[in-house]
Amino acid sequence: MDGAYAGAGSLMELPLLSLRLSASYPGKPGVLKDVRLELNRGEVLGLVGPSGCGKSTLALAILKLLYLKRGRAEGFIHFNGLDLMALKERTMRELRGSEIALVLQSPMSALNPALRIGVQLEEAWKVHRRSTRRECRRAVTETLENVSLPADQSFLRRYPAELSVGQAQRVLIGMAVLHRPPLLIADEPTSALDIITQAEILELFSMLSRTMGIGVLYISHDLFSVAAISQRVAVMDQGEIVECRRTADLFTDPGRAYTRKLIAALPVTPQFRELQQAVGEWPA
Ligand SMILES: Nc1ncnc2c1ncn2[C@@H]1O[C@H](COP(=O)(O)OP(=O)(O)OP(=O)(O)O)[C@@H](O)[C@H]1O
Ligand SMILES: [Mg+2]
Image (cartoon, rainbow, N blue to C red):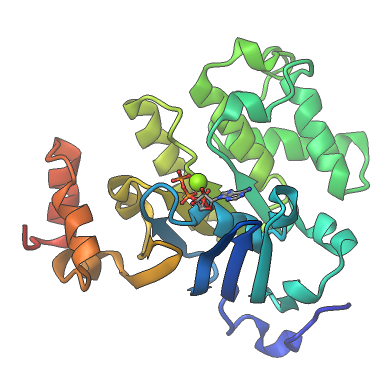
């Protein structure tokens, strides 16, 4: 296959994703400045940083979709034995959705309002698989169970407008993990949700990573939700990764002034205290 860079023998020992990227938009240079990142198989890596620092640009660059926004990226993206920068768009299209999935912020706008949920899931399956109707139904049922949604006919026949925002986000996450991709990129996936639903969706990502071995790049400007599910956290500021550490280390020994500011700004809620206990005390 074009773009292969590692023999199968050593593949499982390599990070799932390893990249070094710079990116720009017309009239906007230096949006990503030599960003380096590694993500291991089955790991949840949080990416946190203020609005405009380049988080979504990095997500799009990994999927090689920056061209949709007239952006350009340079560097390398090694993913699961492939050199993505060397791949043709045709091959990238095969990978998107089957090997690398993306979940975005607004579930309602990502679903087609005119199609029933069951039909949308079946179509997402057929994009990457030739299979019998029975296999397709089984995959749809399984994925709905994985995201704790009912898989009965009455649910499958609903339209997006007949779902809560939380249910719609679960459908999209179900769609994203339908093909059991090794990598899932979630860009602010809980921003449109109320606080209880946010917590449930966070738990869902964590569970999917544990049970299905999916590596998750979890992007948010909210350090609290990132810390709740990530084994490591990368902190981004103005297009640079300023630190990337184990979550507990980031809290107990934040290396950068910017990280200390982020931690100091966390609201002291009961959930925050739980997190504090989980990682130990850290300096205020
Ligand atoms: N198509 C574009 N053309 C020019 N500049 C752009 C374009 N898209 C994004 N930018 C700029 O690139 C920078 C990074 O944007 P990006 O969307 O990656 O930030 P972000 O960290 O995801 O922010 P947020 O937390 O608000 O989602 C910002 O300064 C933004 O204004
Ligand atoms: Mg963004």
